[in-house]
Amino acid sequence: MLLDRSLTVAAPIAQNGGSRARLDGTMNPYAKFLGDRDPFTVIAATPRELERAIGRLTPDRAVAAPAQGKWSAREIACHLADCETVFAFRFRQTVAAPNYIIQPFDQEKWAAVYSAYDAAAAVGAFSAARHWNLLFLKALRPEAFSTPVTHPERGTMTLQTLVETMAGHDLNHLGQIRVLA
Image 1 (cartoon, helix red, strand yellow):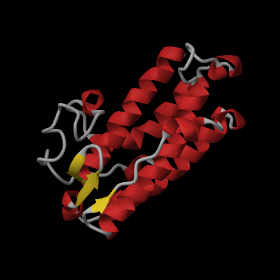
Image 2 (image 1 turned 90 degrees about the vertical axis):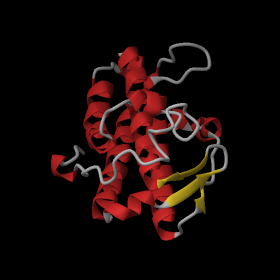
Image 3 (image 1 turned 135 degrees about the horizontal axis):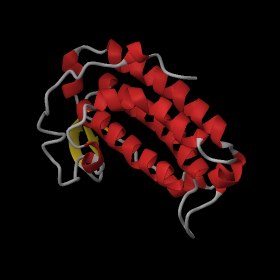
Image 4 (image 1 turned 90 degrees about the horizontal axis):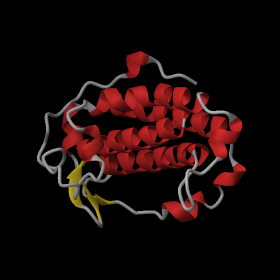
């Protein structure tokens, strides 16, 4: 499912103190991938970019790990789909319960079952969940993006920082898939 371009969310807050101002990566470990790009433009474009990147791979290439202990393109797509559900919950909990404390997860344990999934299913799941998340973000009032949320390992940040983290995370993994292609 390709994303409707009209779902791009306008950036509601200009570089608040809890986000890109912390380029050292303590709040957003993916800030270096995002740089000065608009996070809302990035997250709206990712489903299409992921579909293109995965589409360039042969089935054998999609499941081939680049090195021992590294994820294949299929596994990266599965990880993105899993993370989209995590972001969905985190966004909604942040808005529903300001000062929500994020529950971290062990991505390697979640990845233990990725061999049961195919890349196309992962891209489809990711795209559908991303579409839903963009609708949610688009429906929010601008002040919602300054709602505080705490990550136990990174500290207190805002919903805006979570969106920026999502965008940088997307760019990081899209870059890995493109290298594999």
